[in-house]
Length: 411
Image (cartoon, rainbow, N blue to C red; front, side, top):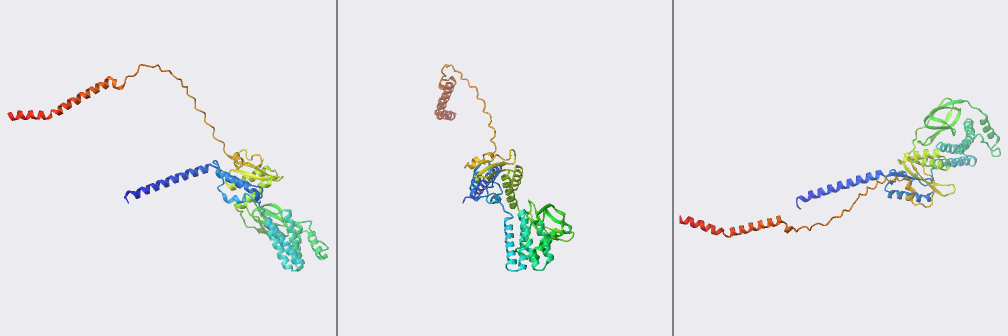
């Protein structure tokens, strides 16, 4: 191999690398110039996700739009909406059924107390609603009945009092329970315990016994006895716990930051509810929050109308914000995305058309040929004379030598 070959190969390799690097930078800059667009499917049905998939494919083919950089949230932007509390509520119902069976059929009051307490614990991770309060009241009632069966009258009374605070309409069926039990339950309702301050250490919105009380940390006046506290918030998981207040008391609930994925799911649910209720302010706020989580400034929303048909609209983080909703009638994805494409740059004005005038050229005398020009002929004659003289002198070169030789010899 010639010594220069390896250096040539190295130079070519370096050159190819630099060209590839430059091309990658140009492609990256071009990609960054395209606006990120999120497709948010609020239809909550897997059968409709084909449309969102087609929209993502169209974004990949667009020259001015692109899919979001954060692709790890795609799975939370389509399919069934978040049911954050459903699993806990169903588990609490199951624990109530088990507690009732343990107490009334198996006569195991200790197991009934444990099952009821487990059901209460499930609801301490749920945002309170009327349904949740009613279920918590049933669990506390069942736990009180089991404690009464264990001859723990004080514990039973506290559980009955909590049940009444949660559901003032709760009653025991006299046909199912003996008079001493129904009387104990009614006495707990008639008793009016004193009040004491409860300090809640933690961050979030505080709920005491299923009712909102304000932001934590904070101190709130509550009745003596048993309570349950829950902290909620958009940026935290719902957590809480039981507390017994016998005087000035405190409960500490650790911080539980919500993951970004959970925040995306919550915000998508809030956006769906706002659209369904025609709450424009809530819709705008939820969309702004979702866009911030996704890191986008544009979105296309798909939703299910009351008549079961799909509608779609676009959103931009600049005026006019949302576009008017349109019924989906098998429009192409490219058509649906047109409202998000930036306007074309203005066309430059056409250049002025020059004023071209045609001037008639009068025919003149024919131009003489080059070989007829006098200077050409003069040059040719001079050159020819020089050639002739040179030839004569060249032919007589030996004669001149002889003459000189003779003259020299004669001297």
